[in-house]
Amino acid sequence: MTLSMMVLTLVVKSASFGEGQPIPKPLTCDGKDEAPRLDVQEMPPNAVSWVLIVDDPDAPGGTFVHWVIWNLPEKFHGVGPAVPQLPDLPDGSRQGKNGFKKLGYNGPCPPPGKLHHYRFRVFALDGKIGLTMGSNAGDLERAIRGHVLAEGTLTGTYQR
Image 1 (tube, rainbow, N blue to C red):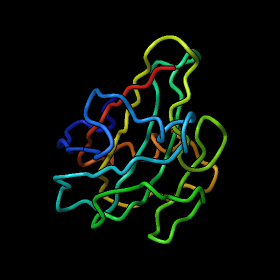
Image 2 (image 1 turned 90 degrees about the vertical axis):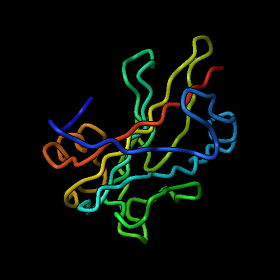
Image 3 (image 1 turned 30 degrees about the vertical axis):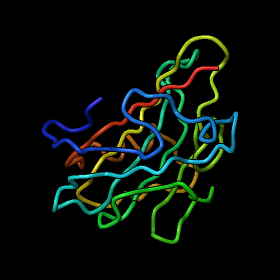
């Protein structure tokens, strides 16, 4: 879903998995549940901060959120893998609650059966977001409306 009318495209990559490829077990609830290293390329020069939302649109109850983090510094073009599950991080970024009602990243953990797709959606913004601790993906998506300069998605898969 595009949250702005005219946006540029960001290139989002991970050394852990490629577009449409399986997410390695250590990055899931069946492993260490560690966040993958993500790198963002072609950040617009006028970007002030960026946002990451990780979700699973194939979840049985509707889209399930695995990570929300905002106010990532524009000069820093990557995130992970050792991001602590704290509301406020040393670089000034902030994490909200995921679908597990926890702060930070919790990886893929689908019910057994069908293949699930996990979207790592990145948004470059024209400012910083003033959301408070406990905010969720819906709050974040509303807050960034009209402030998105560029966006990109890396999609991985996981099946149990």
